[in-house]
Length: 138
Image 1 (cartoon, rainbow, N blue to C red):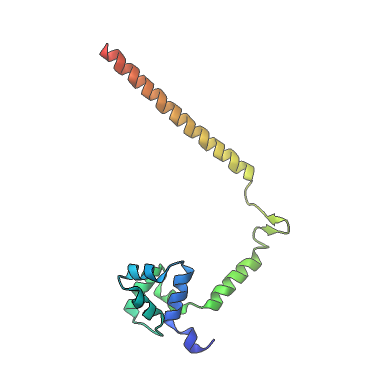
Image 2: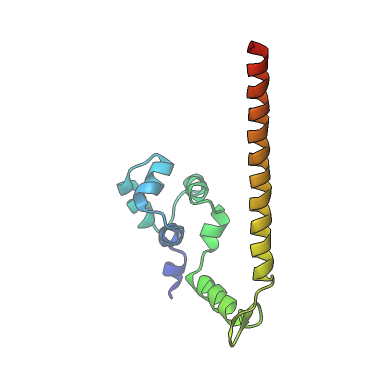
């Protein structure tokens, strides 16, 4: 990759936007400009620092992250993540859970039981209140 391509800020913005799952129209709306203006920015080799800060904020990254963005770094990150996954929760037979799935099921049932108890108590409170109203009106 040539130096000109590596330092093309518009391409970096475009790639970060794509990685964030954002369309040009959404970025344009966030910046208060037209989609065509976003297209022009993404075709620019450089932009003003103030504009870069605005774009970074809209993309929810820092301006420095845009400046230092590298496609190779992203690829290396994911390759390293995948390579290390065998040591971090993977085995030849599938994932190794750091929790007991049965414990999670028990937690779910306990949560439902507590919810049921609260609902039942609320209904008992309503009945007691209605009985009190009926008794006072007689």
